[in-house]
Length: 166
Image (cartoon, rainbow, N blue to C red; front, side, top):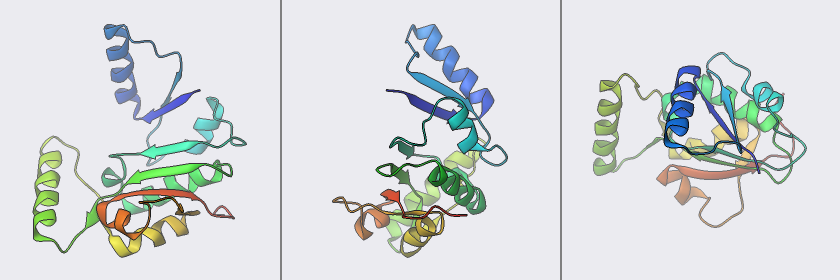
């Protein structure tokens, strides 16, 4: 089984150096250096060994919040184009909430990440999460915990819609 780790080139180099320094084998990993704002992520994944004819799991945990909406849409559409039937997308989204407690936690998070130079760039309304997925060729999976309650919590599992986006 192969794992594909996609991140900025400098971050990839740092991750590889840390693994080497710790003596952790990475033969099962394919490091894909990419900037989601400009690079053709789907093509890079295929060129490093991802087989678009086989089901894959695409995990975007702690990624979407740092992307502008247009970049997130592009990335999701690219992943859908190489997602075989049976693939899954697991994504964490920063979801806007009417709860004052959640809003305060989100504001504290946004301030903390901005302070280290990584500002949060997207927040999705819970009701809009499904629209975001559908517009990029995905739909919430029919598995327990993946429906509207999951969207409100900010973590969604999706599967390819029947037709990928153009």
